Length: 147
Image 1: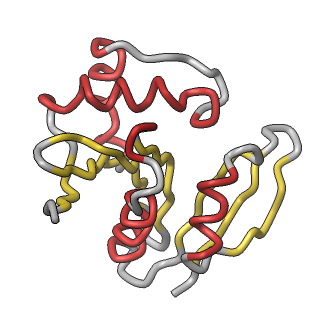
Image 2 (image 1 turned 90 degrees about the horizontal axis):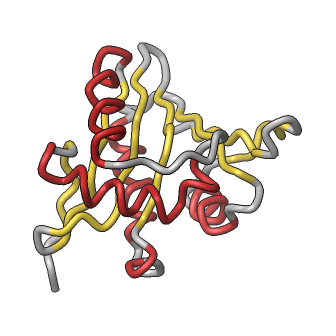
C-alpha cells in the first residue's frame, strides 16, 4: 500500500492544487471563481499572513487532496477541503479531517459546508462534528467539533 503524507503545500504542487480546486469550485467558494496557477499562487502568498495554512495529501508524490486551516488562539477553522475527483471514496477526505482534528490540539474546530456537499457533510458528521447553525444566505451549514 502506498504511503500517505500530509504536508504543507509547496509551490511545485500549486498546479495540482488548481486542478483539484477547479473540479470543486462551485461548492468550495461563494464567488464560484476558477483559479489559474498564477491567481492561486498570488492568493497563497497572502495566506500565511492571516494564519491560513494549506496542507496537501500526497500519495506516490501526487497531490490527491488538500485542506486549508485557519489557526486562531482559541480555535481552528477548516476553510476548505477538496479531494481529486478520480480519488474520491478512498478515505482521503477522512484522512484530511483526522489531520485537522490532530492539528487542533484539543481546541474547538469550526467549518462551513455547502448544503449540497453531501460527502463532506457526512464525513464531518462521522468524525464527530455537529451542525450548530444553518446560514440561509450562503446555503451552508456551520459545523463544530469539540474534543
